Image (cartoon, rainbow, N blue to C red; front, side, top):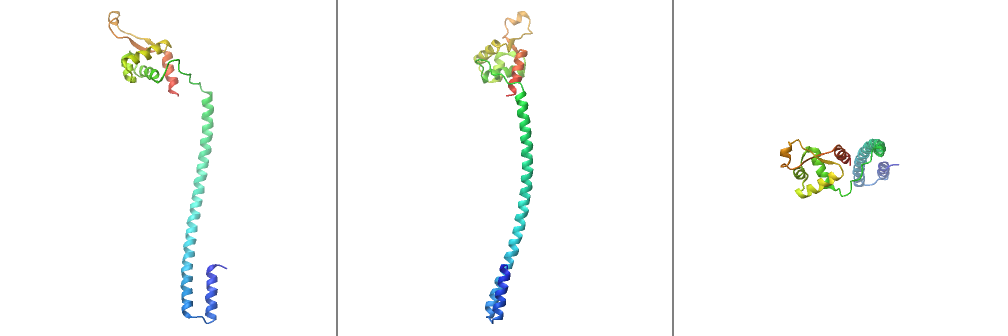
Length: 173
């Protein structure tokens, strides 16, 4: 027996027993309030049930997406394991050396000072890092000037094929 049926039974019992009209009126008012609350709670329950269903559907989609991403991640890990590893930097190389090499890569043959400027290095630091690149066979002198002008022009450098490959490999990091 529910709460409203219990109150109805109480009202019927009081009415039959000759209870006061005022008490019966109060109980009927309370019954109306209780019935309104029951309707309100039933509506809230329906809304919550709909929210639960919606959240369950969202969860199913997220779990499906998660499974797909996990499978893709596993494939990428396998592909990455099969890829050529990026070799470690040669001795004495640092970010500035790589930045200078990248400046030669992106801008082509140029004087070391210009490449250093593009890499954010002073002339002295650019020359130091250019020497490191030359030592490893990644940078070489380049000139299309006549023999007479070459003596007065600053030396122009360009990346070797190995130097270009080095930058491409470093770009995968």
